[in-house]
Length: 477
Image (cartoon, rainbow, N blue to C red; front, top):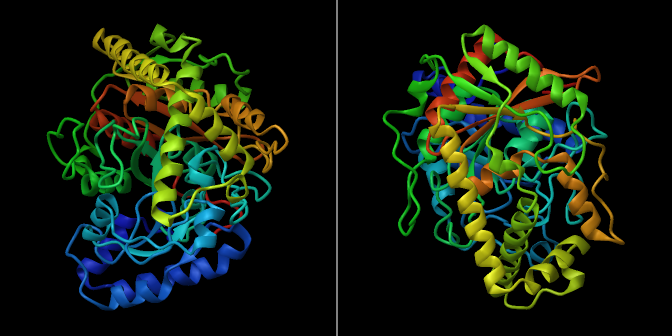
């Protein structure tokens, strides 16, 4: 591991052994933020004074005691801290969280010290982080390109070395997309593995799960250990793991049977050759490690109606979120309060009938059943590119005169990631390829429902076979 980079696991060990204090780690991270954030715009709500006070005090004796953390400014509210979710509406209202939600509390209970909140697109709608409220976050590999979204601020913070771990969430790829764009590890857990309580649940957020972006597989596994499990009120609960996820790192995955898909199952555009090459090179690497890779995939993924079903769920959920924030702030949201795409997608959501919404729910649940049948027939994993293109230039999805065009353009960029949100499966993006322009190109492995253990075993095996932690972007601490 590079001397200039210590992952969160190593930082926690320094605190545990007394070689460093929590305050020293926090001060160092704050210095890196102050150096890099003017160029990258990853952190929009610094929390430096409060973080220092917490680091000086008595922290919970969790596995990451004293380790600095960034929290994405979407969900994961911490009482008293700003929570704006990329919205001018909440920024202008000066909204601060009135409680700490279950997921944020688990981060704090693990011993992390939150030093700030990171940039996100308005309500996490698009796969790039360029909100009107706070401006674009820039990719440390090329500052003219997107970090992805919606966890783009978190990804830029980790990739540039501000922190080793940052909170992220994923409703259509929002962990895996920025992980691919920024050269990071990004695991989307199974539906019901992490909690959205008390404000949301899988009833109103069927697609969304929570976790993080990191640079090492062991950090991702350790954070999953800390966050996984239902909270009070959760009705969908992923199967409990047989042992700690951290124990899966370094464990043999055995000989896996893996499907390979490199064309666009949604037929929303051609897949860039760099992304195809990344997946195919990874297939060769997996075969060299003793696994079997076959060019096959679940046929149900070819259903042309999936884009429509996803859009129905996405737009209806957006309307729910807008209503939620109207109740919190105490006034209605007008077109002047939000971006053109948010308003247009909200109008689309308001036009959806209850039967249409239920049809979409049943369609994605049936998709999950069909895909589980493919896994049950003998396939452990599905290998794909994470994205359909390398990180695109900032502004690519901005079409303010016809805002829904930009939303549909995003379907060419992200044809693979929403599928696991619809099925509820776990999926991980790994930084195994860089193109001729030195841009990271992620590959995605999707596992059967509840089998994060298999994903972490093979991810650690690939990390050892083709290490990436020493690859640093031009903008780095």
